[in-house]
Image 1: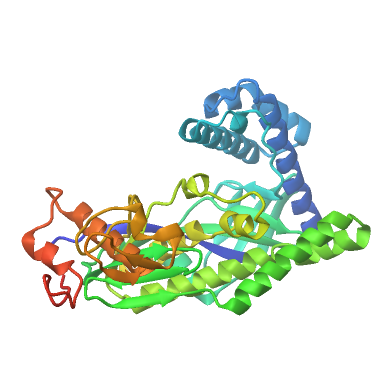
Image 2: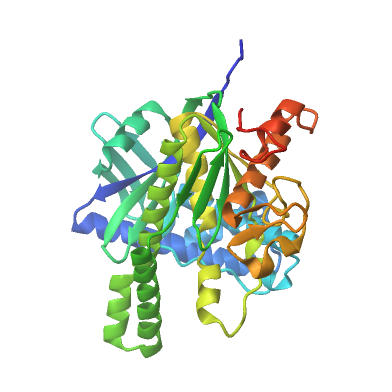
Length: 411
């Protein structure tokens, strides 16, 4: 009897705040004060680059309370947020060895404030109302509305410290409420290797040799390119009408790609129900990708490749809907290794072509499918307790239809 434990998955419920004119003005001034205090802390702490919450709090807490009239909990939240920003910068500096990361003072340009649950914000789940602390006092009985599915998750899970943000385009305040859910872990029925690419968005191969390809439609790609070009044209003009148009277009391209990522990730999780997803760890892929300086379109596609967002959505949806945690593996040589004879050569794919042809055994197949098979085999190897595959598992990874290998995959 396998003892399956529970997993924790945090989702963020986006709830609309219904405020009158006076309440909106008060909350907007509070967010502006939080924004100004953040930028002040980032500047005065730049020389020390301290990441200690205690140090930043001790040095600047009373200063930002007096200068920006912030409530005590928001002042504490500002010091914690600045500490996290400098921790992130130091991590990037150590991992990327890039001194430029620390040579520029960070700037906080969001109208967003971090609140502490049951201290400066209280939420009543019975009638979906909240009370919020501002620089002018407490806003009481503020109505919250959102997605029905989020209502259920809010009542089932554990609430965490939220954020309040202001959308300049729609002039609406939103409460971003993290909810921690306990998910019962399930045993996977099969394993799926997923190869992410720019020409083909996702290529999936399962241990039952089920192959599925997911792509962003050409119409979406053209629309995205049009929005990007339109935004660049308006930015170069710099006139008042162009700035108004830019504000109207703000976030449209981002929302388009986010929606596509949601749809594709949902399709993958629903098509491979009860499956463990194996993906590549593409953390430093942008710095390792060669692009030609003259090819502007190629640079734009590489810089705006949304692999991280796609992988993140697949990971949390796999836990949320299937109760199965995904893993990431080393992507080294997944596009150059032959899945039949396991030989590795850069000549197997000439100039990054779409077709894969092994120079050792002559095996030919779509390069993205080959990459998915190699990711799958690496994921299976990682899951083995002694770091090696058994004979049965090795045979199950062989390409079906070849004379010297098994006729089917099995798990």
